[in-house]
Length: 253
Length: 230
Image (spheres, rainbow over the protein chains, first blue to last red):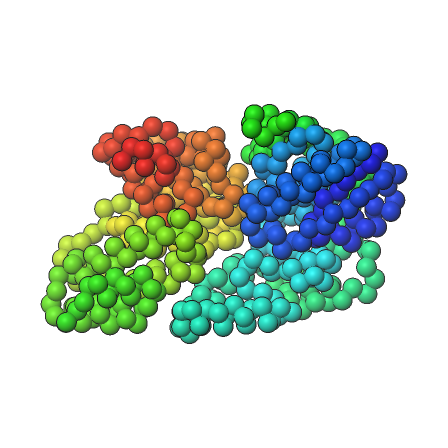
């Protein structure tokens, strides 16, 4: 098959390795993980790429998405002429862990977990959207604080940094998703440092890349959702996570 | 001379120092504490509307709420002395498994301004804890928040527990949080849903009014439904 793949760059390391092993022809378009901060613009962006591929690549058999529900970002995506395929996942942590069930167990056991990947650390996207960056983005944090001082005065700025950063006190673990694909990872050490600075305990958690492999190999079983032309992806509010419904008549061709 | 226009402006701008100063002046002048509260409540209404329209965002809401909170702290003893009492009680919390609470904290601040007594259970709150607190404090309302698609499903447990609580037939549930949609609220049978802390005040008030038989509204109460019925 000829498969187009729109992928969040959180997944780049395992995707690059596994793409090479896929029996299919793959064309990759990567989007920044920083888009995850706002689900609606992210959805628009992904839909833009889907529309572009549908217009430009009639030979493509399907469009793979390296995304899960992602805070609702993929809900509302429409397929017009090419099937869209993605894993049934709340987000990429499921994709790294290899199953919905494993993610659920992790969440029940340790809800206060901050997940690190090789790519989100390397590309400076760790702690994006938390309004307080990591020390590796110390400039970013400082910039935010200085912006607040300028706009609202120092007292308010101090208060905002405290209020917006308070979530960190509820977390207890920094978990690095280890793929075994990056030896002597600098990102891992950075993640360990970031975790230590926040007083969390650090763990490496071994990934199981089966979902990425099966996505790229075209083995789309019950762990995946296929959105056929004329369908829209929506939240299912149950263990299936996502499902399809007919697209509104204005959306479908 | 206490200037109520400046007081309103101070809260709108998140200027706690000015809000406190003007409030103290007003108190020293012997002005009625309700009259002093009025421009601040007005200010939060203005700020809330701007927030709902996404003209301002979380930081501005937080600092305005903080400015009002600082000034109200001075008024509190006088208000209590004048017999001012919250007439509604809400138990708020982020659901089991979810550790994020900025939105919930904003709702707490806004509801206090709307004469709610707030019991804030914090994050990672089980259905049992919601119910126990509702029982203990004679709550009218439980407010559940979730930031994650992975935890929002836990709101079902709270609604189920409330349905089973025969001793609290008037207890109601409103829900909110970034991934929480009106569709989800309808599916799980919540009494109200709001997309942000500002509209949460209108929804929470309407839900309690309906429970008390003071207002007639069908289905899940949400901002658009209120706009139509108003």
